[in-house]
Length: 134
Length: 134
Image 1: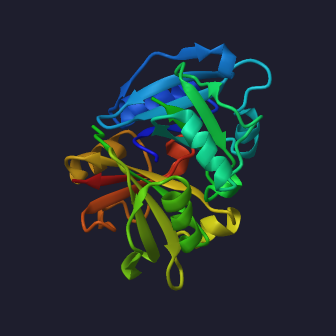
Image 2: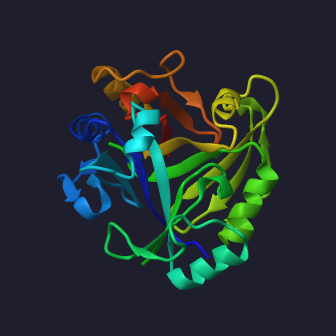
Image 3: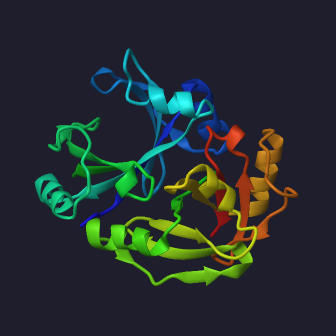
């Protein structure tokens, strides 16, 4: 079912510093910061030849990554996002296998404007997994 | 400098269960388990169209992922591996920028039989980074 790894999301407390690490130390191509107020994050995209790293900093009140950064003040890997062809097929497969979908169990519009689901880390080897329809 | 994301490594306490999650729930193609006694892990490779997920379980005494699993008993994302063309150029660049290389600072032979370096998470947004010459 899952296709490509769409991105690895890394939550960071200092987006300028994290951007400099990827641009200047690791020599990668990075975007300008993009505010995503609907998702409570500001994002810098690190473009690799085969996938993306997304550096995320909290934006506004109640950011979904605020709690993670409290537990991990240096930052860290927050989630992985796998692509799927059909988010409703993916949802039904997750429900059939007993995997917990976060929130109300229905797809939402994700940060790339496409339908996404987030899956419970306890059901996925301790890793927060996003599924995105592409 | 960095090229492709070679893999995301996920440390897991139960390799059979983690393999089943990726094979049966997420519908991905997975390898048989491969013991890597020199690296203190048993690995299952999850083959995605653009990169790999490596599921790692400790093997033997003093496994490098044993401490991580003590802190994260459900498992979790352990490191990311970026490809580089020349590990010595990468080493010199890391030293010049003040980034800390783990161990004695020299490349070692990694789990794929190629030269690798591991970089200090504190210098890389809280994320353990492996560089692998390909």
